[in-house]
Image (cartoon, rainbow, N blue to C red; front, top):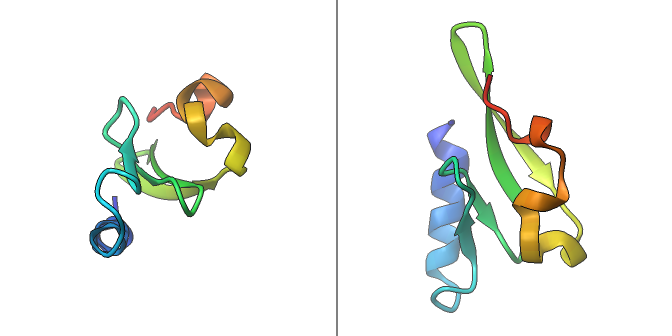
Length: 75
């Protein structure tokens, strides 16, 4: 995962109320509740690519189960 994207999410979360901003999916992929984004990681040959997945506010309560398994698959 590109450090800049993840670090930006972490830095942004520090300026918000504790425990209301960041969440992590089972694969340790970070997300932002207020932005509606998850930084997903996928393999492309010998490389790992980071891709943001933007979600509507009404699915943020259960991100992992709202999208198909392919959306979260690394390989």
